[in-house]
Every structure is written in C-alpha cells, then in structure tokens.
Length: 193
Image (cartoon, rainbow, N blue to C red):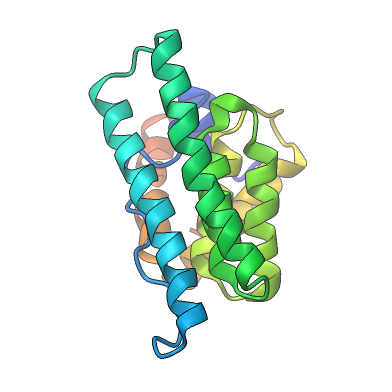
C-alpha cells in the first residue's frame, strides 16, 4: 500500500536530490579515548565534509559538463572510500554503514540507490532503533524512481513512520510538509498521522 507520503517527492518531482535540504550528521557515537575510534570518527567526518562540499557545488551550479562530472565522480569516490575505510576498520559500528548509505544515496544519478538502501539496512541491523537510518532510508526510497505501491514504497513509508512516531525531528518536519501537500491536493491522509 502507498502511504501517500511519497507524493511530495516521488510523484510530483520524480527524483529529488537526497541531501539538498537535510543537514548531515556530524557526530559519531564513539569512545574518544580509543585511537582506533578516533580514526574511525575522523574518516566519517572527512567523508561528510567532502559530501557537504559537493552538495554546495551542486546547488550553486547544476549544469554538468564532462569535466565537471569527472571532477564530481573523483571527489565522490574519495568521500565513499572514507566510509569504506571506516567500515573495514570497525565493521560492527553502525555509523560507517550509515555514511556509505548517504554517499551512495546522494549520488543516485550514478545508479547506486539500491546499494545505499542496503547500507542503511546494515546500520539498522546493528541498531534496530537507529532512527536517523530509518529516516534516510525512507527518504532515499521515496526519492528513487519506482512503481506505485512497490515494496520500496511500502518500506519507505514504514521507515518514515517509525522515525516520525519516535519523534525524530527531520521525520516530523518531512511528514508535516507532506501532510500539507496531501491536504492541498485533497488526497487521503494516512491514519497514523
């Protein structure tokens, strides 16, 4: 079933930039006294910093020449590699997988959305109450081209609902924005709202 929250992203705009209006997480929950955990945190923060810079560049100039695409792909590869290194360093920590999910999800134009969903799922398996991962997996699912009522739609709805019901601030904002959209279009509002 379609929860209709995807209407604002998927049905109207088809493919939204995943991170255009969403702040990236800046803190990794780690013991600061351990050198390995400090390096883990540093890798993730460096990946986020590169992604932040790419988002800003993309917002300033959304036209793509061949040289610009090549430059973006090189920078994206460096950011993704930071996340990969973090996962290799401490595979039992959720933040590395979350970082990879953001990187792969953001660059959906290169066909890696499904990989991004898988990385968010890995983070959720490590911490089933990781609301941030549920929220971003839901947003990524809604930003992908998909069939109406698909399993991606259903999971995205469940993810947003879980984050919303647990008072995750970005999910509350997202639902509020889409609730307004549904009202304006005279579409049914899901019963859990």
